[in-house]
Every structure is written in C-alpha cells, then in structure tokens.
Length: 113
Length: 115
Image 1 (cartoon, chains in turn brown, green):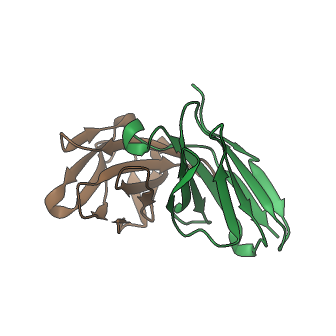
Image 2 (image 1 turned 60 degrees about the vertical axis):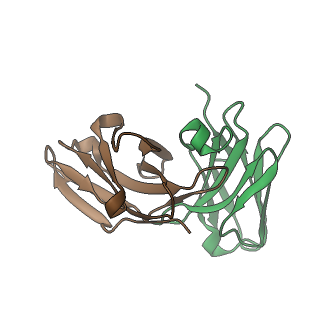
C-alpha cells in the first residue's frame, strides 16, 4: 500500500530564508508524486508534480522539488520564502489509474519577519 | 476556467441526522474522488468513481454512501451523523484518472458541522 511520511509537523522560517520540506513515500513501483498547499479553510492547490523524466521539477510560486528514488524522497524547496507562503503543505503519492492519491500528514509553515 | 463546484459550502446538522453533499466536476471530467479532512488532519480518501462505477474505496464508514450520476456529478450521503463526522469534505475530479489529467482538481470543500 502506498503511504507518505512528512516528518516535520511544524516549521518556522524567517522571510527571505531558504526552505526545505521533507517527504518520504512508500510505494513498490514508480510513484506519481505531488505537493499541494492549503491555506486555512481553503481548498488544495497543486504546487508541482512528478510523474516521470527529469527528477527536478519546477512548480508555481518559485517552488521546486527533487525526486530521489534511492532515498524514496520528494523534498520541496524554495530559495527565498515570502510571508505569503505561510500555509500547510501536503505531499501526496498516487499509483495511477483511477485509484486514490494518498496524502501525508502535512507540514505547517510559519514565516516570521 | 470552470472549476469543481461543491455544495453546500457549509452545513450544520444534529447528531443522528442525515446530510447530502454534492460535487460537480470540471466539465468533461469523468472521475470523481471524495476526501474527508478533520480539524488539523490530512485529507483522508473516502471513495472514487470513474464513469459512474466505483473505482477505489478508502476509509468510508458504512453509514456513508456515494454515487456518480450520468452527468458525472456525484453525491455523498451521510446518515446517522456523529460528532466525529464534523470535517471539511473535498471533492476532486480528473479526466480518466489523475495520471491522465496530471493532477486532481479540488473543489473548495463542504464544511460539515455536527452538533
């Protein structure tokens, strides 16, 4: 069964600092990987995804993520965080077909001035 | 561009009552997914449909049922509501599965409060 682990429940960074959010997945084959962002009381917005090909993927709002098969990881990065990036970030994995996408427990990002 | 529409956006019910949530996918999308997100929790997959047939099932309680109609909209029916059913319920859609469309497109959610 597919699963996702986000080891950091809460992260606080200063505005302008770099950011890395960790994500480890468990899945037997090549997974479909996603990062979604959610502001309080809002829906889920896709930041980026990895299906195949180049292991470094670029997303919206200046985010990028790198797929590392050897480490079963798909960490999200941003070189310089803005106050508007404060939100909850979910890593997710899917197996394809018409089946579900499984979400991690999320990492809540706080940005301080 | 048209997005996934969920109704109602907010719903308040008493314990043991029933509730129905509706989801209208993006036009032409034939796959619908339902997720439940409790307070401070991650979205938990409930059930999905492709072309009106159940395509995957997750941790959906027996008190809940869902279906997809010929126009591809979907309804989630919840009976004998419990306090623990209070959550944000998301619907997402895709065309032929998320791998085909590249992502799940999520609605804004329906917030159910059970008193």
